[in-house]
Image 1 (cartoon, rainbow, N blue to C red):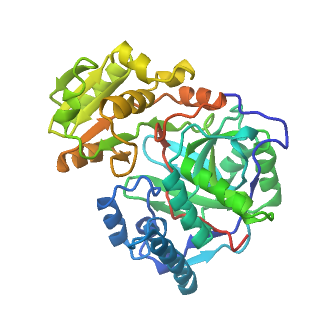
Image 2: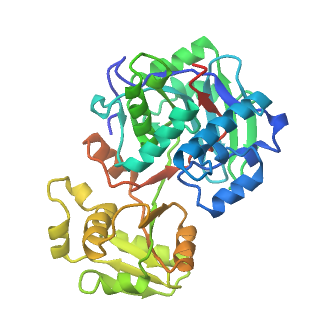
Length: 425
């Protein structure tokens, strides 16, 4: 995807006064962080995080109460209390932040800042997935009530790979001691630096002004930013959103699938409905071997792995007649042949007749968790094979959005390392 644009018509990233945990007031930085709100597997993961430390960030991003309004008010009260108690404190001056996360296999570095919001038609920030209205509404209520951005979106752009501009500042900055360093239980090591030097900030901002970005993770939060901006007619902090920008020419991301858990649909019923419409093969497992078979089948066409009855069932080679009847023909071929497109239009809507609502479908990032929950609840897990990044970028460039929750880019930034209070901007 061409990510260059005329100067002044690209990304505009500005510094902000980050809210950060005061290390002396919490058990450890690792114990107060969390994955993004939509990656937390509830309720088990939520309870685990809540018990890790009384100040875990999950109490702000996923507050628990009887009603939505009560949840969001609870988050606001918790935020104010933690600020009053010195659990969270703002940095003394506005900064851009260099963020690094790494394990033995991957290194990711990027810049955290407040990004000027732009509509999709402007071609500056490109979404590639549809969003769910109820999720946007929930996130909007939370941000509105707390006047805060708790989690940076993950955006990607592509430089020429020459190591100048923002990349040069990032790599110079990582030679210095960080503001914070911690290792989370998933094995990732995280470090954060503040960039306050005017020359360094100007170098980053000038470089990014020549680029556009792809939303890798956080479509619902981006849609939320845009909604809340429309509610505030006067220029101000709502015109900007908290983001992490990663140059994937320098630091490539991984693209993984997001799986579906179909509540109330036993595997036997799911398979029976596929008779004559898909080829079905039973696999003995274990899960890694079954996923290898899925990858091989996906190289030839649409394929899915069903689980939930103690075994694995590979379904592929959909009936062409089914696809012609159910998949809209007015979209690019790359969209029509996506696994997510075939799953939602052919299988969910027509074969299984399952509404795409939270009562019927859950979206789960972790493969083993999807299988475990399906087996526990006598449901069906539909395991997906990831989409190639170049397909995502090409569709986004064409302005074509994929079905919601089609991809999972990563590694995702840890939530809780730096927050943005709109009251401080």
